[in-house]
Image (cartoon, rainbow, N blue to C red; front, side):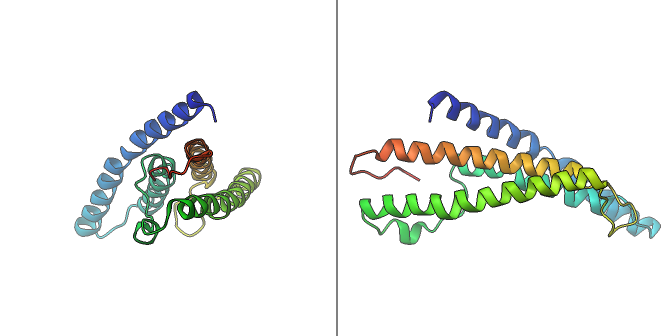
Length: 172
């Protein structure tokens, strides 16, 4: 994998995560407004629930690539660190191949199909009175999965480059 491409993917994930992290402020304001409205007027803001779950979904899913690039995701280091160098390489290779790339391919395929279907049929969230269109959040989720997949390709190619013929294991 080209170092320049990997650098660009990582920078895009960093930038997107920074922008997405700003969603926490309007989400907090919205939840606070909902709470005050319920307490004072005994009424609910129709759009509060939908915007909150959509904002949180965007916040979480576009942060996946960032988490992978900075190694802040949950790992089983307790067991992994006890393995030998060759075994670590094998486990890392197997894990990327079967627990990252195969599920990621399925997720990308199904999320893209769901996005297209949502746009074509004009899908709306029908479980609240506001009933917002669903396709905008589906676009964000697809985008987040694409960024995560690209970052996975970058990390895996870096792993292959670092372990190519050497008897060392990359820091993960």
